[in-house]
Length: 473
Image (tube, rainbow, N blue to C red; front, side, top):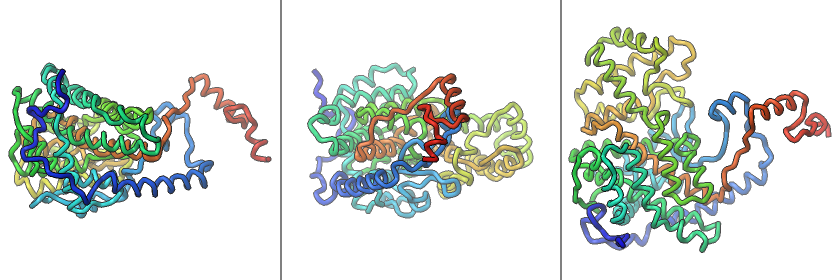
């Protein structure tokens, strides 16, 4: 039988394990915050439990529940004119306040882990604690490596990635210890598993990359002197400090996006059945693999290549505009433009645009992205039924990854998954901290819906009670 914790190839630490930090602990920090927030939620339910906050239209029942307020997500929200707020903080505030690597210009994603878990902006020392924790718990069990080594290279990288992550479930503390703890303490087990998953997810993603694209088994070590992102890029064979910065930015910007998207909702749903974080996250990851969710930045690259093929790398604005008109005629869309909620340029696009302007002097694809930003919004504004003609985060990310040498665009969804693990694991921890019940909405048939509509018109509720009489009483 294979030793589960034997260090081999992946995750072996370059230096001796140092003692855990005695002054900083994520779990200890969260203890009081959990107690305080439980009281807040308890009071909200007690005082406003019967207050109606939303209504549902028939079209929404058939329309993917779009626009229905379904449940609570504390980690982030998206506002039409402000963009995404991470625990109430804008992208600009995140850029300004989250600690950076030495001589770095972008936030470390470790800071986002602390922020989404605790709701508090981290100090430099708290970010160092997260980096240290991730490095010290990064060792992959040998059996996980062997499972991934045995997979065919033709397998989609997202499938490879998901298999590796789900295999980690064997060592789940939640799975082994949940029945020994009170319900009020389950969040601690979820937190430990969540942090274990985050510690190992970059190694599994790196294995996916090396196995599928580099075609070689590489013996390397996690360097305890490097941060999460720098270790990740190193494990994939990249040696450009600017790419380290690009990945730090990517992992930070994509860390969370409310709770109702497919991956977040799937993770929340499966987690509500008390599944452990490994199973729950892979459920979300498989949702992310769907072409309607996680492929947007790949589609932008395909779109740009089509544009270049037709009108070259340096078209005039007029040539680009005429080409775009032809592109839209068959009913196509412009990838990377528009957003379900936003009504302004996605601040995450702006962050990437500024990064490109600082670090990339002249590149045809990057230049086209910036030219499209000049041309597309005004063009789309001239069309009917366009709520948001502005670029979103996906309009720029794929081009940056490609510029720095990550040309395998079917790996981009894996990278997306690494980043989104930060938000999904934070959401899962807080779902158990608030002791949310299993998610179980009602459903009906079309015939049943027609009966409800008829009853509604007759002034009755779905139980057949006369709502007019009840209002009079």
